[in-house]
Image (cartoon, rainbow, N blue to C red):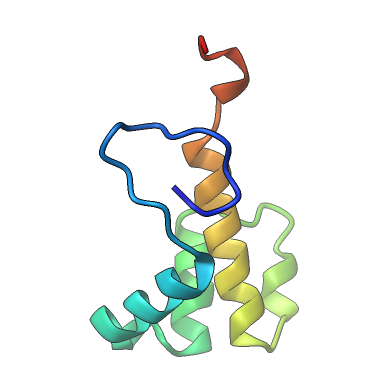
Length: 83
């Protein structure tokens, strides 16, 4: 789970940060470091229905979009989860 979350989805979850996720991705998957590849990931996974990120030139912005969308999808339905 990303830092800033109030609850864990799994008991063995480790708190982390977006910065650490970026660093680990860059180290493990250097082929994803270029902007065209990141845009392809966004397009293929339908992470940006409005296609706003296609106009962005900053790699960090696209990475933030990917992280935010994956986080949102992971938490989808959490409002109805029993506490």
